[in-house]
Length: 184
Image 1 (cartoon, rainbow, N blue to C red):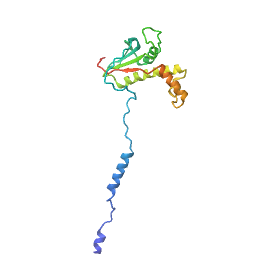
Image 2 (cartoon, rainbow, N blue to C red):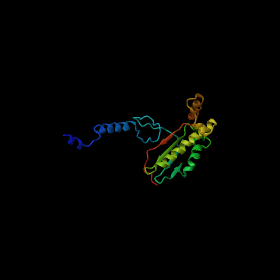
Image 3 (cartoon, rainbow, N blue to C red):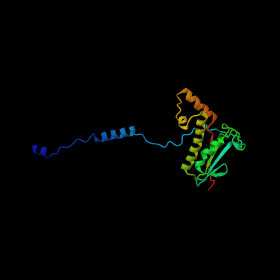
Image 4 (spheres, one colour):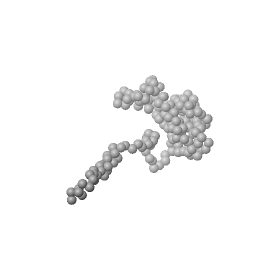
């Protein structure tokens, strides 16, 4: 008998290794965050059962069309992406100076319509340029720089009041039409 005890090899008890591996797996699954695409942060209007017709004068609509070749047609004229912001600002802040343009910033609407073949990059660049035009006009209205406007603290009552006044003067009114096949 003593001889058979010597022939056995010493080993590591691995009976709990599966339990430890399982616990580590659970730990990493619970503590890991999975990145997800956020999309475009926009507040959508509430869903309505009825499709209400909103009557707007044609002169109060700044029309931007983007075709499948990412070419822009703004107010019926071809335009470069770099010129949208300036033209949008002139339209929004017209205040009746030009009788064929918007009556006031509160009545002005920017309409963006894209083709189904339009790239996301160009669509987002157009949307960014229009939003930047609104932000620049709001900053000018408050008599501050764009950077100061973008850094207004909503927890400070005076700054929040200024921000609200600027938004009331230049309300962000962007109409995004359903994409169609407008060609290019």
